[in-house]
Length: 137
Image: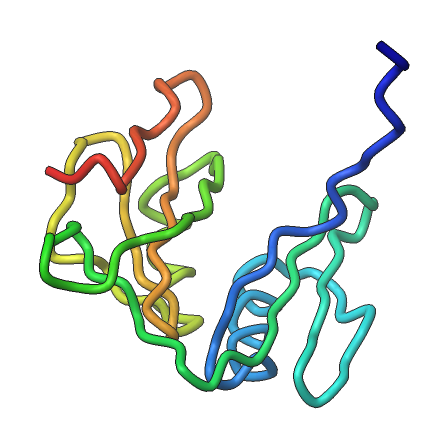
């Protein structure tokens, strides 16, 4: 078997009806820089390099349901952000446009919904990695 070719994760991509609006939310949330801005595609990068986050237009986008429900749009992926102060990070997330999800599965993790309805988790270092929201309550 030949060695695997070099592969580097450039950026997860989130679908949205308005990628510029969603990218603007994550730019405010994370303080990252827009490195590519096209009508149907926006890419953010962290200031010190590393994996970015991209957004693309999906006209048929339907926000997932959290927690998951068999008869509703399922979560395909979510983002986890390690934070140093859960309360301060939550206040910041809400000030930038996130909504605290009604269902919170763990005391040391906060689940939020971005303006397009994608769930994301904030958690403290040293706590267990948040469990997958796709696993449901």
